[in-house]
Image (tube, rainbow, N blue to C red; front, side, top):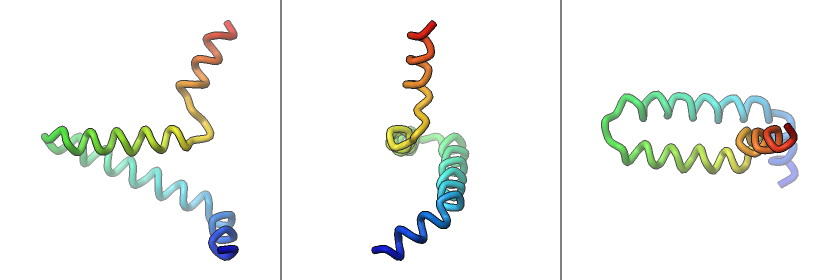
Length: 68
């Protein structure tokens, strides 16, 4: 288990870049296909990643708007 944690700590930038690339490619593929089922799946995945994100732009925007 410690080896996994060390690997993630060492390669977190690479892991995040790969996840970003996968989501980008999936978004392009989903936009090309005519079905809406894959759109719904990608939306769920993006929402999950957004909730796990350290930078949540919707929340940040609400805080900025409230402080004006």
